[in-house]
Image (cartoon, rainbow, N blue to C red):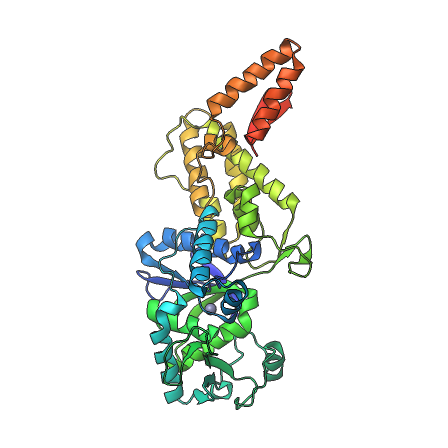
Length: 458
Ligand SMILES: [Zn+2]
């Protein structure tokens, strides 16, 4: 089936055809690395990782070039450095690595290019120079501003009118602006702030400008897919379009625009003032990354997603079921050339992950009941579905026992469970409790059920 995506610019689902199927280009706006990512930040990383996987499957692994930037210079970074006294570069290097590690724990594949804003300052200065030359930007009091009245297409992505845009951008009406909607491409540095040389004095680039310059350098003038969160449509993406189109003689920045929906926390907006911000880093201390990934993909990427403990529990249960099926087939060699067609077809239709999960559940059911010759194909389909969704990337046995942690080895735990069983049989309940508490101290939780005692790592 051809790929179909809902294009924010066109406001409809359209068949996707890359300009060059041998080099399919996609860009997603990455994080500003001055603190931990919250789970809302992880949503685009995971959703567009499914897209990346689908494009690689469709066009070939080497044919897809995916760039996601890291913003490593910004007012917030400078503020964090002033507040803590830590060098701004140390802050950004640390949080860039935390972001990489945390997204890797969510089975997000490494991107092809991860441009750092500070590594592309000359590209940014050159791009601004061209915009001034072409009459789309002007320098004033150490700043360079983009002149929105010089670009007819401004507002085309967000479909906002001028007044809405001025109100929406909460622009400061600085005296050096020709028009209140004009936005900053370059800003002067205050004494002591990180700064780079430019024809307009020492300063740093504006955030919107960074993406336009990095896209141009790393991917080219017109890319196939530009992705990001809905909250970036205006002003960030609108401004990226203005800068790139005007620097490239009107050539579009992207052929398709994809935007993921908001994430709410127990039906409330996630915000610092409500104290309900959940960090990926903290969630990973309590939940396996695949559980978080499943939960993030449970709603269609364009739809809102409500994050709750119940959602996490359901996600873990679904994964437990899938891993149970895989464990049942652990000695079966998966059949060659068998694919999870239903799951793939769902993803080809605008990354419909809820439909893909329904198909996935059917594959789990089939793997649980398959016998004889069916088993090899059932296992192959389940693993292929997992590869497409970025799930089932763990060993089934390790999933249940978490065998990669510090705590005691599985054999040791099993032996202690037997010892506890013997103690109970001998009515030595103090000894039985001691074994249970001892294991709990080591992070192993025992659960007594009708079928005997099972265990898991906390
Ligand atoms: Zn961007």
